[in-house]
Figure 1 (cartoon, rainbow, N blue to C red):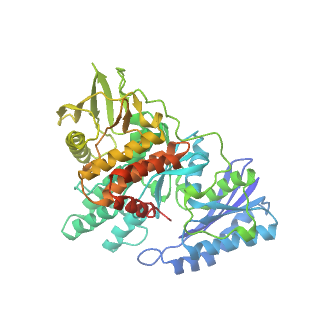
Figure 2 (tube, rainbow, N blue to C red):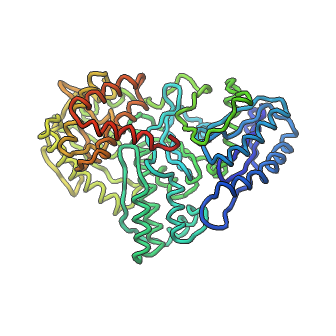
Figure 3 (cartoon, rainbow, N blue to C red):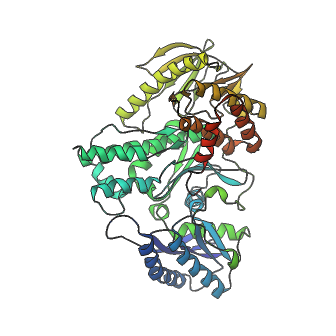
Length: 530
């Protein structure tokens, strides 16, 4: 089968031909480059109108006119650009009398990595201009395990470089300037597997305005942004039990990001794959490759049903070309991580040993992080966890007793609690009880920070553990993020998440502040393309 793909979501007009018989992909692209500032939708659409016919003609010539299907980027993206590409694809499919395939641009970014790596059930990190997602295939769709709560990673970096007066795209310029920089401290914001860039970018702009060397700020910007993305990727691997990570998106061309992800995976014994650069930036090759898989599965659309969708989220796509697989491969594998076994168990940021019935939790140095940032995070999280565990217990929430704290070694000695993780024993009743526990915690202005199903232990009662991302706050926003993190972990790994989440919210409502549930609904609407 030969499939012609058309890409036109934002700045890159691209056409490609993928031949399934040889697994070869030809790509022809023509990128829009604004004279100043960021992408202007009208100018980008004008570029599409001029460039799309040319790149399609080149691709058709390469295929000798032998095309079995036409695939196009149906969304998400800039509406004016999507319309140009969509119109061209419909006209071509109609003229050639071949099936039309509507492809989700974000799913294509991760599927091209899966296609090239031949992984079974990976966690997928998409780091592109307008997006930053952690995704995993589960229960017929790609589930969002974590995502940016404000702006895409590439756009965040571009906002910083526009402040400097640099032209688009800013990422490569930051990467080049960072080669001569040294570390300065900037904000680091991770909430479970979600993250935020706005405060970090504001601080970076302020640092430059206050006289810090641009090279130092660029260096530190990369160290913080990419460490955040690497940390949440490791948290997703830990939650799901997967040992495979795929990178997608244009920001994935950055050497430092790939270096961090590779180092993290090597340290935890996972496999990592980043496609070649031509498949990382926006391109029609990934559209053609996924289009071929969808066409083979019969997942085509009639022209009258092929309207573009600028807000097309990846978790809205019914995945017809995959079956009998899930990213949640490790459920059950770590159920006994604190059950008395003497071999160490690795979480996302710590190694846990059980010694004579006492849990020894060591936050190990992360090879991917800058040494100064790593030392700060390990120290601060160890101190906070010890403090918050005690404060939570005084609030009526079961937690392990803290026997000893070794701050220089970032090590805690804790009471052994529970028999298994909630991930392996999740019921609606237990979800309800956890909702009550979090409400009590929030009533004392305490935030857990990462209440996933792997950070709750089940025994004679439910115990909250691992407060390493916790902090003090009485704000409904921070409390609602706790709820959002838990429900995200359920939706990404459980078989029937809806009743579990309803029970969880009912438990919270019975004890906590209704304003927090209202804020939770707002937070759900903040995800990309909601």
